[in-house]
Length: 124
Image 1 (cartoon, helix red, strand yellow):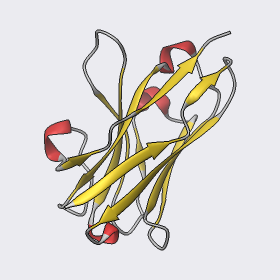
Image 2 (tube, helix red, strand yellow):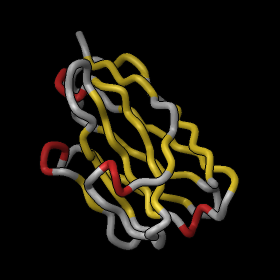
Image 3 (cartoon, one colour):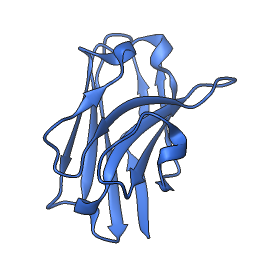
């Protein structure tokens, strides 16, 4: 199986930027579709962005469209989430996830492996 470790979270002011990274080890990273999810306190875990194993068709949820970008570097076994123009409502624990389907899905049940999460707090 694949192990996932997120990094890059932290405290940022509204309007600021962060870049999350998710490093994978174990199985061949390039076989996996990848997704980013987030979970705010008291809320369900929600899909944020996904990218297929080839990386040619990244997708972001409407709630973050125009502000967040997902990308991957298969040579580095890493997927990224670039977050710009951050808002207080983006505050959450962000998780990366991997699916053997090779593509991505928007449902958390479609993913086989999860990282431990990284906290993002947007506050003045």
